[in-house]
Length: 474
Length: 152
Image (cartoon, rainbow over all chains, first blue to last red; front, top):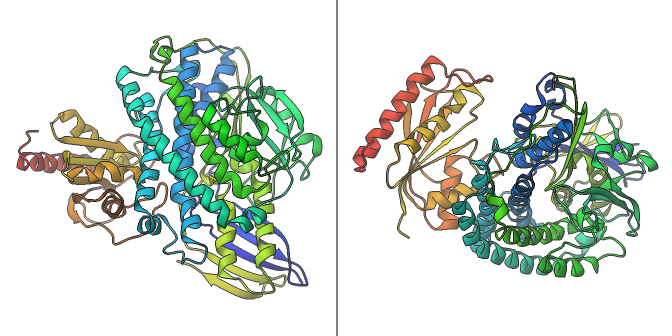
C-alpha cells in the first residue's frame, strides 16, 4: 500500500508550495515531491512586448529579487543588440547585484532561517520566527534587519528605489553612483562587516550543535553549476558556466551562457508548475544539479577577496572535493555576504562608477539573446527571441528554484526517512522538512510565480484516498 | 532615544494597479512639500527594514488603499501588535510597529490613513472615488503638518 504525507503549505519561504511524502508498504519513506501549485505565466504574456520593456516587466515577478531579473533581462537585451556596454555601466550593474545578494542573503539567514538554529526544532512554530528571535537575541535581529537594509540602500542609491528600480536597460544603466551615494555606502560598510562577523560566530556555534542536520539535510552527491570568471574565480554577473561533480571534478567549463540550452534541458512534471532543469549529457533525472550559494562555492577556484577566501578554505574542509550537505547553504550564504561586502568596499575606490558614459545603443542585431546572472538563489537565465522590430516571439526564464527542484525533492525524502515511521506525523519531522526546504531559500514567486503564506496542512493519505492522519497548523 | 524625524509618511501599494497606487502617490506628494522634519517613503509593500526609520520618527502615518470599508478616507490610530510572524514581503503596519518597538527600542505614535479603492486592474489612472480620496488624504496630512507647526 502506498501512503502519502502532504505538507501544505510550506511556511517562511517566498510563495505557496506543498510537499508530498510517499511511503512504501512497510511504512518507510520511498520518495518525496515538492509541488508548486500556483501559476503566473510571465513567459507567455510577455510575448508581443518590445524587448526593451522586459527589465521593467520581469522584475515584477518578485519583490525579493527584482534586481536579479532586471539585470538578467538587461543582459539579454545587450545580446539582442549585440553591444558591449560601457565599462562603467557594467561595474554599476555589478555593484547593484552585490547589494541584491547581501539583502537577500540577510533576509534568508536572519529572518527566515536563524529562528530554526537559535530557538531549536522543538520550539512551537508560533514562537519560532523573527519575534522569537527578537526575544532570544534582539541585537542579532536588529543587526540582521540593518544588514538587509544596507543591501537595499545600495539598490536605492543606484536605482532610485529599493524595490523595482527602473534602472538597468538594454545597453547599460540609467544613472551613475553619486559622491553622496558613495559616502553613504562607505559610512555603512563597517557596521555591515561587523554584522557579518557576528553571523559567522553564530554559525560556528550552530555547526557544533547541528551535526545531525548537516548529515541529513540534503546531503547527497550531485552536480553543481554556477558562473565563474575566466580564471575560475567566483563570479556573480558575467563570466561563463561551469559544472562540477560531487568529487569536485570539472565536467563542463567556460560554457557561454548564450548556449546554455546545449547543456541544460527542462523537464515538466504534471504535479507542479515548477520546471525541473537538468544537465543534458546525463539526462533526466540523473542530470540533477544544484545552483546557488553552495554550488557557486563548489564550482569556483576562489572568491577573489581575502576574508571570504579564508572562510572558503574552512568551508572546503567540510567536504571531499565538494561540500554536499544542503544544510551548508546557510554557511555558503554567509561567505557570499562577506565576499560581497569586500567587493563593495573595493568598488568604493573606483571613480569609474561616477562616470556618465553609461549606455550603448543599437538596433536588433541578433534574433535571440540570453542574459545570465547569479541571483542570490542561483543562476538566472532570461532567453528572448524577437522579430526584426524587437517584439518578443518567445520567452524562456530558467530560475534558481526550478534548478534546485530535484535536489529539494531528494532533500525532503532524506529528512523524512530519518523521522517518519508508519502513519505518524511527528512534529519535529515537519519542522525539519520545512527547514530543509528553506536551506535552498526557494523563491516561488520567481519560479512560477506567486506570493503569500497560509497555515500548514499535513495529511497522511493511503493509496485508496483514505486519510490516515492529519495535522493542521495556524 | 529622541526621534530624529517629526513625521514619517509611508505610502505603500502597487503603482501599476490603478487605485492601489494611491498610497505611494500620497507619499510622493508629501516628499515634494520638502518640509524640515518630515520624511516620506514610497514603497510597494511593507518590509522589515522600515522598522528602523519608524523607530526614529515621532509620528508615523501609513497610507494605503482600502478595498473594503467606508467610501470616505479613514484615519485610525494604530497600536503595535503584541507579537506576530513577519514575512519577507507581507507585513502589516501594526507588525512593523511591534518590530520597531522590540528591535529598535521604540515605536512612534502612528495612524493608518486608508483611501477608498474601487478598481485594481492594471493601469495608473485612479478611479473618481480614489481621486477624491487622494485630495482628502492630502488635506488631512496638511492639517497634521500644520498642527505640528510645519507649513504645507
